[in-house]
Image 1 (cartoon, helix red, strand yellow):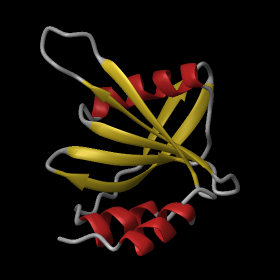
Image 2: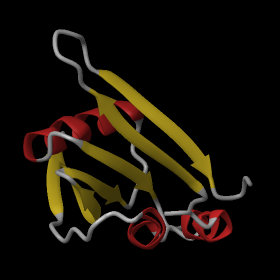
Image 3: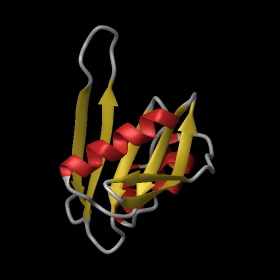
Length: 119
């Protein structure tokens, strides 16, 4: 399946993650919202998409790095393989976070920052 790059950029910049994954990338629908508690605060993670047991969830705010890691650990209890998107609709910045897990090796946190104003 060929991805339409221009439409993909539009989905990214307008925070239309569900459309990006379902229409452009070809993932399956996923409808289970997840609420996690971290240090007395509650974070709601909206479902975006799912593919072969791996899920994509969207947090509508961008907490600090330490809090993002704590959220990731809570999500891992429900969904071992996952991608988290931290993006507040009113801000151009997005942070995409995932963890690489390999047997007998320490986990490696990966983050990609995206600014909707960049090309």
